[in-house]
Image 1 (cartoon, rainbow, N blue to C red):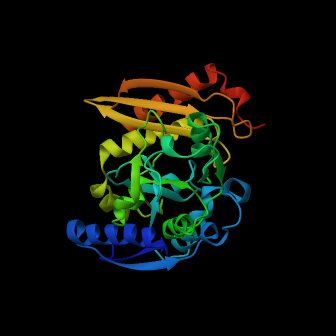
Image 2: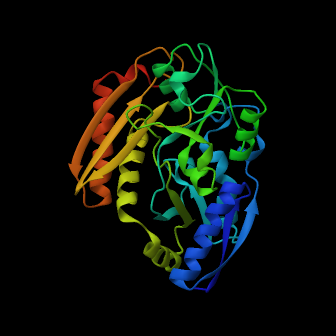
Length: 308
């Protein structure tokens, strides 16, 4: 394996931070020199429509995968929450890095919490998961679409387009913007999406040497938690069009998994929630736990919430 590799990354400030973080770890821990290949994805270009209407989260990774496929890059760095549950044939996640704060953040200039917002306040989010959970907490709110990178979303708030917006805490913390957070939603209020706060390293499946090297960067507790979360979504056919949340946390050797499902169209429908737990020691057990949570949601009536 060459000691010099190329990392494909989106060109937003957060994506570049994430790629540079991986670049530094490659140098410090593996002795590998990495250069960055900045790319603009379809997900970055289409800002006037919500993701569920234009192809989902895969729009943020396809161009990076093309760079891997044709040899322009060896490695792609993703926010794991943006990675589809099923990777295209010929690609693999070589490592999942230790997770940042997985929670969602309430961001506003004039209000300290969701409870302080006036009746009918406008809250910005294009995530169906967040929309359904926000409306379960405050049915009076107007939740309006909000697209763009993190800086764009903050600018739209500051320009007065919204009373408040909801963002992933991890991105704000990574960019030194934790001061913009007025309050963090606890997971019993706003359950995160699968993989939120974690970084995934994608490579070609046939690059065995690089896979072996990157495995040294993996954080096993985060990997197993995220595998359980992603298994819930995979079992229910999860995509951007499905307001599904899943979050796992450790209590000793026991992995505790919470999942919630809202209705994509009838937002007033009650959220379906479940909690499961098991002693998890490997990926197979983590995925089995996620499948158990999906089965519980089906028992609660998820079939009537799922498209088709």
